[in-house]
Amino acid sequence: MEEVYGCVRKAGHNLNKLADLASFSSEEVYQEIKDELSEYSVFIRYSLDAYENFLPSSFGYGQGKFNYSQTMTNHTWMMKVRDLLNSLVSSTSDEFSGFVDFDFNKFFEEQDEMNRFVEKIGITKGKA
Image (tube, rainbow, N blue to C red):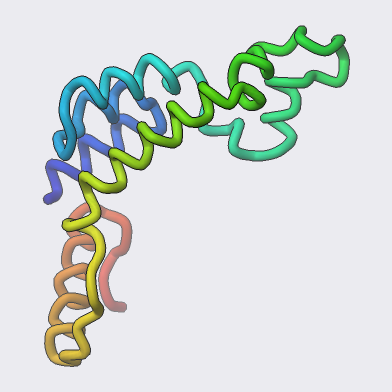
């Protein structure tokens, strides 16, 4: 797990690198993600960055880094991206969803395991 965490952490928010590491879905899905979304910075999820990349205040409409009418207001593109992301969610849902187990012993064991993991990878320094 430490090796996987290290690889993902090193990839940062770079979708090309993350897609190359992923294996829940087909290579075609990851290539399509790279083709459709890799040029967009993680920062455009914040409104100011999104506006300035798509609809910059200092330039006229259509002068942004990304073409708003070919992306955010293009129904075909939006449905394509939504379907692409839905395929990723469905390919990982068995791994990352389900019912919460109310076995408190198991819960505390898993918390201890997580604490050992985050200490091992350097996120925390352990108990004082």
